[in-house]
Length: 371
Image 1 (cartoon, rainbow, N blue to C red):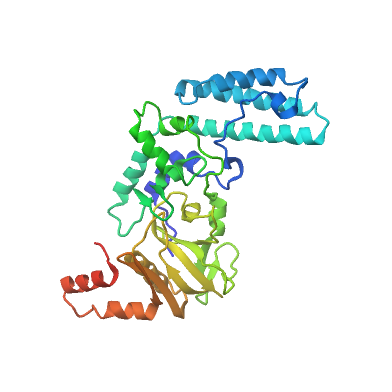
Image 2 (tube, rainbow, N blue to C red):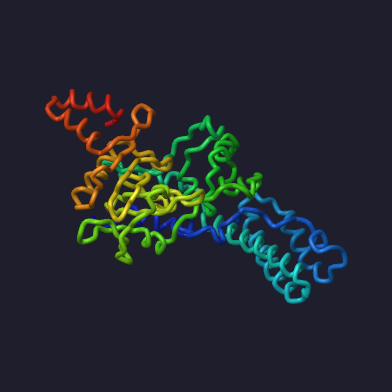
């Protein structure tokens, strides 16, 4: 599989890398949650001897307008002072439960400080247009998929979603920012979106995506072994799952590299791609190095059956072992179908002797393909 990088995308991504590539949740976990405005006596009871300086800083900090760019730098400065004073206060505390409490408060202040510095680094929010530029330049490349950027309403979950580029550039990679962005667009937009968001209540329970570091992505890279089995690129060990385990998430990159990871609520396709375009993404079951199941289930990129077939062809050409009874899941007119690969390919072969227009018409009737 080709390992040549997409230079244009890497250059653009390099410009926004400090915002996109934050690694695991760690410091990002609930980092948007602000430091509580109450005095230290609220947390430690009356008569706290070391609290005056901290309370004064906190009062000044919470009096500042959160949504103005000109107050952002002052907020960062005050939070930095707050972290320093909390650290000194911790040295004076002897009771274990109080020490734990002040350590937890310090973590909140440090995370919020990190988050505000990330907003400071954004300078001006023009990332939507950057992603549009990437789309435009790569549009000439066949079957390139980009993060979905279309707002829709999920009737099952009763929520708006679809602005995955926003999830990618958000320092905390939150899943549920689309409705906030819609409200911001209806406002006078006198300030940038993420600063505007500082004045909104975003629940601390908001779900976040864990975006892998470059090293973690490298651990997910798959290669072909000498015998044609799938193996991890770094270790050479054969890839295999338990027969009853859920399928891997997979991404087939524009460099024709295969990445796999075990999915979860916080690990999604964005975890692997870090916002980059792909050739396909979905789920894949691998047993003893052989692919036994593959689909195109990916809300972030929404591949079609044509993308899925292209990936299968790439894998076959690369000499990757596909199980004799490998199954494929695809969608036609919104309905899911699952069948053996052989059966799917037979349908396509049946179109081979038709004229191009009839062949395309038949394929569309089978798979709802779009040109």
